[in-house]
Length: 154
Image 1 (tube, rainbow, N blue to C red):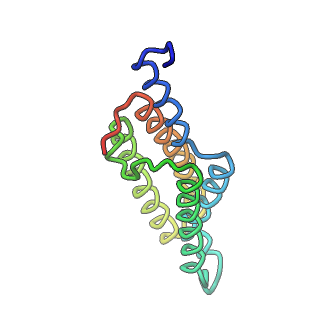
Image 2 (image 1 turned 45 degrees about the horizontal axis):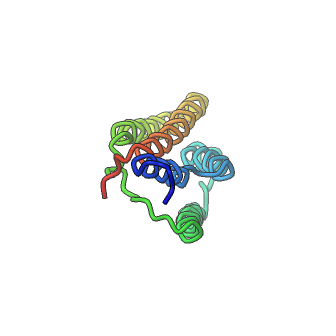
């Protein structure tokens, strides 16, 4: 038996487990690119006379790639963390705030494009993309902190 007290062993196990809540830099880079492309669909479509054909298929490919990444990561690591945000008390409010900002930003972009204000929509796209990106990074950080502190509920 090791000389480390049991509570310290539990804390160390939680810290090791919390690493699995982090995502690689490649994921975040691709997430940022996809975020700008998807949130800017009304803007990009307004520049083309026929709109953007095949957008649904492109969105399906992005969604399937994200789902595949999550499944492969869980299988590879063998760690199955709760997927619903309600399991992480430190991240709930921030997740809700990011969700509200995302919806408001997308509606704002759509309204600006509909009124012919594409330059303003592009500026808003940058603001929304940065806010959502930083919010998602912070949510992941809070999820990791909740795992390390043992606050995750099943």
